[in-house]
Length: 380
Image: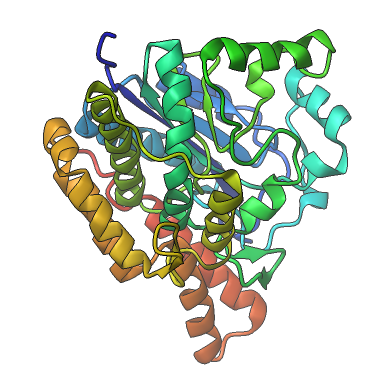
């Protein structure tokens, strides 16, 4: 089997807020998307709701390439938004926006989603980050699909950015997952023994007219239909650019580690979805705070300890890709917290300083506006 390219691409979904009210816009300015499209040449697209916009990097061979491209995308869309008195926030739920006030984008695919999924899709005022890694062989993609499910809770925990919903602290670090799980064909993927078996299952739904193609399989990780990649989809969108690149490095290195095992006629142990779902819930609820299940020892392990084990395991792969700095940033996330931690802290600090509830939520939005652009400055 030819070695995969392990190329990488990152897609991010952003929310657009009015600078005066800090609220989500209900309708996008008619000229904004065309302006972005003219500058970004196919790297930007509308999302289901008009208050959202999606970007995607080019196919990148290094994390530096991905960093530069993603920084440029954030910087450019933010600049265009600013002309319309709007700001860009990389966050998975808005602190106080309400779905009932928002219009969806009128496009055939989105109109069909609105009709098929009704109130479920109207609640999806959420954004995510998807990371594609090039795995060109179909059967290898399916093999790695099942083995990679193990670390999806770890990735979710490192990316949480959705603690608020409709003006309330939900007590969850990723409330986005609660909303997303209301959709069909989401969650952890099934295990398949071959690409052929996977395709036969997809064909059942297509033949029955349930879906048009596999783009409507919305698992936490899936074989991409459009590209020869394995697409990770569980993560919240990271407010800070450095956090996003860290998770991309983690995911990419993990896939290469699994490929190394395969070359040696070994594989990562396949754990039941029953156990992995328990860790998925813990990441959804607590993020990095309360640890995850160590299946072998049968106990809760501190998240920091699990990350140290992963860093040791992936040393060779980080060196191969030259992304040691990005991978080691996991320690910084554990030390400083995720976006969810910083949002809750900003809210509580604002209340402690005498602000009322609404003003404190505005302070959270201001934090998000600032942090979305950290690290996006143009480099010489």
